Length: 379
Image 1 (cartoon, rainbow, N blue to C red):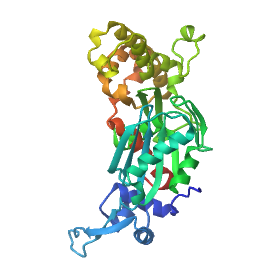
Image 2: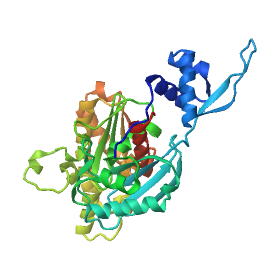
Image 3: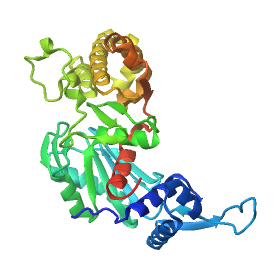
Image 4: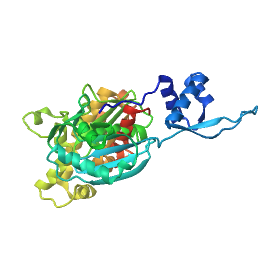
């Protein structure tokens, strides 16, 4: 499927962007804010009204000198809808949102066993069908997956959680739903979601570290999503934090993930036959000295990885997300701060904020909704 962006002239795109940020607003004020002439603004507005993207809402106030009250314009967030999907290691969730990011529907369920690309497609399709996304006129579907994605081909190169390689996920979902589909790494989308609606709103350089079943990072650099040459940037889970201890090891996931990940923590509990959930262990950490020691070591390795990333990227903010990162934020921050302060020069670190993600489990879904709009529309 050819993914064609809404065809707008530069002036029309400027008007639409202004409308989305300053509403309700008159034609005259749009001209002032954009620097476009009034005739150009009027022409652009008429096209946007004809498309249904913009609507006239109400009358504004007259000026102090009186005169005709201006007609105010509103962006129409229900012009199209966007589906965001978050494929996690153990759960899959989706949301249907308007163009302002207001969720109209959401759905979640546990992932059943996935052994093939068809299994994955079937579970995503079933979820979206149950959410009744066919009832709405869709702009597109965005999907976050726990793996590396090649933006040039639309393929998911590798998903360790399911041991799947080279899955043409975009193509397969487009064939099912007949709308544009965009697939991206889940943590990358999480960063975009937090910049749009969450903890990093208004900031231009963001390092989001997701701590869940796996460990990954999403990057916003100079206000733009950074995915690298082939869409694979942000794989912080593969960083090496102790080569002397790691060089002879074979590990299915990344080397940092060997130290810090939900997968590693769960395996620790299984090997010691600790019959309780990871959440319960965290809630009663003092009663599990062996796990507490493992967690302390894990946090040291995590701190080194984050410190290296801070020195490299000089971000405005480090956002911790993911099931473990969100729920254990205070505990993790208390353990990593002193290590980071030893590694990162004070003149760099003093300007870096640390925040817990605000969107919680919906971060990837909201990032996917935002991503589709950026690719096909104006946001």
